Structures are given as C-alpha cells and as structure tokens.
Image (tube, rainbow, N blue to C red; front, side):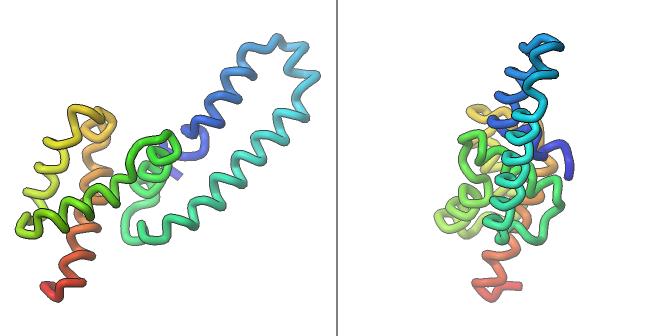
Length: 136
C-alpha cells in the first residue's frame, strides 16, 4: 500500500494519539488491548476496500487515497468526477481535470497536494464514461 493506508484512517490516528499519551508502564499494561484494536481496524479497513471494486484500473496508491479520504469524511472523488462528466459531457480529460481542481481544489487542498492521484481517478472516470457512451 502507498502512503494512504490504514494508518491514515481517523480510527488509527485516534488510537495512536491515545497510545502516545500513555506512559511506558501504561503501554506495557495495555499492549494486548491495543493490539486487539489495531487488528480490528486493519481487518475493517481491508474488508471495506472490497467495496471499492469500481476503482480497479488505477494504482493501489490512488485507490488507497480515495478510500482514505472517504473514511475521513470527505466526498468520494470518483463519484464527484462522474457527476461532473454527466453534467458536462463535452469536457476532454484535461479540461475535466482542470474543471475539477478549479471547482474543489481551494475547498479541499488535499486534492491539489495529491494531484497525480486525483488525475488517475479523473482519467479512469473519463475513460469509463466514454466507453459506456461508445466513444472509445
């Protein structure tokens, strides 16, 4: 997995914050409980990754990025892009990318910071929709 793995979920980050606030003695006493919780978070994260089968066709890093951002409570990039394509069918891939970033980039700086990953999603959406329309 890329940088956008299970350790970037809000559950993992909250647990990590609690762990780091514990003294060495407390960590020793609670190690088993924390291991149970981290195992549960990992299982839940990996099980939910199957829900995102429509992301096949992009890199694992881009897929992990989309899933991670959804789990953080942000909009699903794939669905946002597909909605734009439906409303603005004449955009080519580059125009779609520019439109998406101009519309959402300021409100969601993580999109601009991860432009290459967003571009993978945009290109996948564009390709899929145009295949459906029989244009490819």
